[in-house]
Image 1: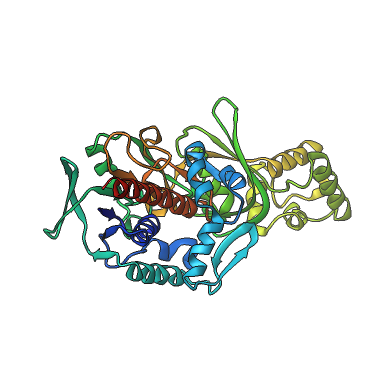
Image 2: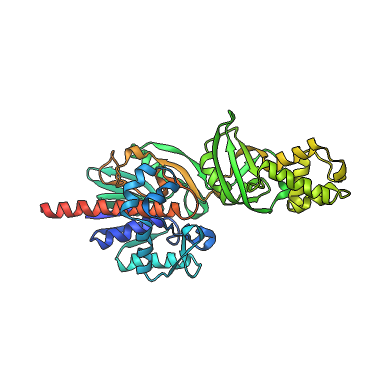
Length: 413
């Protein structure tokens, strides 16, 4: 019995280790010079391993594929992920938002742990081995690499990732392999990435905001999604946690409008009362200086401009209508949505192998012995460790199915 795993990322490494520990003869092919290249840069180099929630709560963070993933996540939970790495000697810490990291704050702890696990479980690893072609002849998969090697196995696991961060080797190879075996692929689009705006926000680039609400509406006015938390202006639009999360809904939308509430803790009435109070206390002040107490300087000037107000106007001459206009812009600063940032900047890929063509164990319904794990499937989630957990849970599901089939075959011999 032999298993060939293509892709040495999170899903590929875990699947290879679990299969080998169960008695499989496993070969792992990785196109890069080392395994875990994308793992190394996740979580800004700290590697946010998982979101430490019970399975039912975890699944609430899944954007696409929640129903499909239910079995896999319940079988290999965030706690199982923690146990796996702790058993490899990695000390973990859980931070705000139930995000789990290596205590050292170094993703290299995770990549090295995988390297040790692969070696100790006797997985044969070929680095710099990019797969060129995959075919199945009878019951055997034949895989050829660009360096001229050929590999044969009766089980083939595609764990090549998606298209995000292509510099790490995630260039969509798995989609091509899947289609060759008859699978359909939901068009991949960038996810967990910045939002581009039609308005020029360069004057605000680098400005970070906390405790704001960002939401989006469709051209018809339908509310698409909303997020509360931290946000960052870029030279082209909006980024930061809430913008990235919103991208999971907007990456297949066009013509949407983005709405930013800069003071969500205050109602329109309370915000108006506060501004009026500030005006009364500094009647002879310039508008830009009085409203500076409400917003950061650059944002203050931007908001006044968007409200059509003269920043040098004395507050004692600001009309009620102008004040109401200011309140409206602070509570609903709108931007035209021009699209999401490209794959080069995206954390994950939305889209992938059609889930209807896979069993809950991530086995192909079209080709016996073929499996898909991780980002190559049409599963994705919000930021915060969810997507790595999806990789681990689907990898474990594949391994369990392979080992169960091995046991059944052994019993019949």
